[in-house]
Length: 253
Image (tube, rainbow, N blue to C red):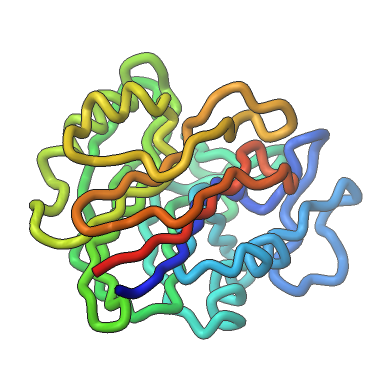
């Protein structure tokens, strides 16, 4: 049986959540704002994960996205889904009006194991969600010859109805049983409620992930199904985003 390490992290565009700041892009020596940013590249490198599922990834118009530099350093591939145009000033957000945007926000999966894109799984919009398109990414991973389904996601934060509506839409599109499968990301929803909506899926790690400085809820999850054994899982320390990273080590096959 082969091992696989997966981490999920809402990176908050690479910027600090306290005060007003904008992201320091990959290997930039000078922050774009005196308030600075947290070391996203260093944080993701320290996770030492085979697969990173990254929410609120930022693709600026003016410069290459940090996620590409991170992937290059790991000799990894990038799979992405853009949710909408936005800005990082004074905080990262998808904007409604043209002219306020300076780039795009979305979901990225960075994999240093062979990964084939199988499709985007639309979850649709909900009231007050600024995303123009929201979907999950379905990949097939080759883990030492074992095919594994991976679905990475970022559901709406518009409670109370947004996440359960989108999760219900997604449930009908999830890969069928028959081989190892992993569902991972920022659900913006509590673990017991997600478990109730996903019969047959098992929680791989439990702990508080949000808000990072003083977490009271777990809304970032890893769920597994089929021939997947959880070796270890952890909620990691606050690194500057408003979410804490989640890391799991799995055995599949």
